[in-house]
Image (cartoon, rainbow, N blue to C red; front, side, top):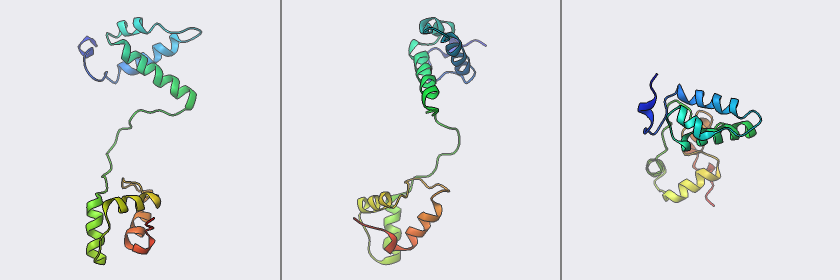
Amino acid sequence: MDISKYKFTRTLPKSVVPAIETIIHVAHQGKAPDMVAIAAIFTTTYKWVTQIRRRLQEFESTGIDDRKRPGPKYLQMDLKAVARAIEGRYGFSFGLSTISRSMKNNGIPPKRTNQFLERTKLVSTHLEGMSCR
């Protein structure tokens, strides 16, 4: 596989990143790996290799991987649509900042997820459940 064509792209191919991770992990045994040499082997930049190394070190120390996960993006709740729905149902409306603050105070995330779906329905159907501070 010729990876020289990927030198100036924003992302590396999926097959190259695990190879770099393996080399960094093996080279890290007992001493600091030579990042410039690793970058030269894969014809990429020093910045990419150090970014991968930092991510590996963070994962080893915390157990948290900060990479984005594949899958569908959830729809953002439209505060204007929520304001229109409240006005249509109850005859009066709140400002967008009031709705946003109330959602935050009640623990409702701005994204629709399965975890908070029932609570979102509960608060949106019972206006007295919304606390405006």
